Image 1 (tube, rainbow, N blue to C red):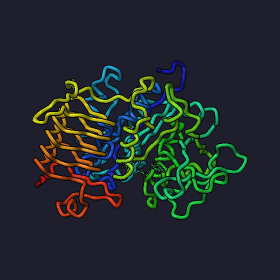
Image 2: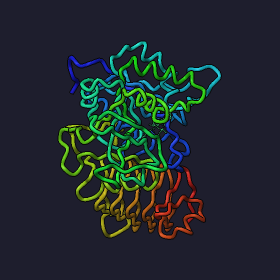
Image 3: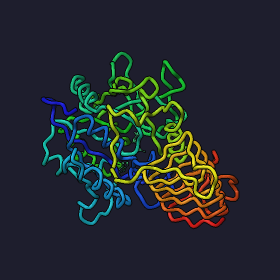
Image 4: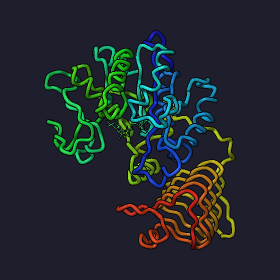
Amino acid sequence: MARRNGPSVLAIVLAGGEGKRLMPLTADRAKPAVPFGGIYRLIDFALSNIANSGYLKMVVLTQYKSHSLDRHITKTWRMSTLLGNYVAPVPAQQRVGKQWFAGSADAIYQSLNLIHDEKPDIVVVAGADHVYRMDFAQMVDQHIESGARASVAAIRQPIELADQFGVIELADGAGQKISAFREKPSDPVGLADSPGEVLASMGNYVFDTDALVEAVVADAEDDDSKHDMGGNIIPAFVERGEAHAYDFRDNVIPGATERDFGYWRDVGTIDSFYDSHMDLVSIHPIFNLYNYAWPIRTSDAGLPPAKFVHGASDRSGMATGSMISPGCIVSGALIGNSVLSPNVRTHSFAQVDDSILMDNVDVGRYCRIRRAIIDKDVRVPEGASIGLNADDDRARGFTVTDSGITVVGKGAVITA
Ligand code: ADQ
């Protein structure tokens, strides 16, 4: 898939996000390290997309609670035979006296030495917490053809969500040239041809290297700046008339079906995290993990296959409408419409519906679990129920969303 004779490209992946709205799943891991879809971590989608685009030089800028993220990158990406040793996690430790990056632009500023060392023609900057497939090379091609100094990947989103995104306005008759960019506006204006939607930034950018370097250096000297890519850097390019939008609908992925064409989810909240898992197990998956023409890679833990046995029940354990990862044993339990990460154990007479169980969760006999997300290593004792009664769940210290999803954090101790 590597492209020959193209520009030299360095990809910088911003992986420092705190992910407050995903609590408690981000209590002790960075948002890009949150497990997703059974065997993946969120960052695997961005890294797979970049690698599949033919760009094998990547640096991952980490900061917040980056331990499990570093471990995952090292195990999965750095050691992989595919990528050799170029995916380098770079922690925020480079400026004396300051522990954290001030914002995403400061993260790049503090890592300028990587750009100077590599001397790429083009820098791709990508977020690390979205679920999607994208060929960045097509965006780079458009960037070069357009003459823009910065390009911003853009997708239509419902206007109600405008305050979660950078919102792009295009000048009339000026093609893809961006006339205004407002970060998370509270008074969005709908699109002329679709008033219920705005054009949102996907948080993925392509820059001419010299332009990016100039912009982050100027930004670093500006005391009034929040040093944020969406809040400061992109608006500065827009003001100079140097930014173009890249329409995500133009991105063609091999093997994509009509159903999952254009799929992109910002899994920034518990509800969206839950819903995108349900997208995976729906009968006709809206996001198709089985498209090997554009593989999503992750660590290969070398686990044995999932197994379904009778246990103490007279019926075998069973899973329907579900994704069951390697290492799982479903022993006399019934699993419906759920996603199980590796090494989950479910015991006889238990029933799990519409739920996400992460690695090593152990569900005891006669348990009932419904519309729940259970983080790693939690032991659900015999006879316990979760997700059946919101008040009960809150009383036990679990998070329950307004839409009724119960989240049990890592290490929670559960009483029946
Ligand atoms: P947000 O996701 O709200 O909006 P931000 O919190 O800055 O913006 O996160 C962007 C990316 O940078 C994420 O991948 C995050 O993990 C990472 N990040 C944040 N702070 C960082 C730091 N200090 N060091 C390293 N990495 C850091 C952004 C854009 C919007 C756009 C949405 C799309 O600002 O314009 O619409 O993404 O979801």
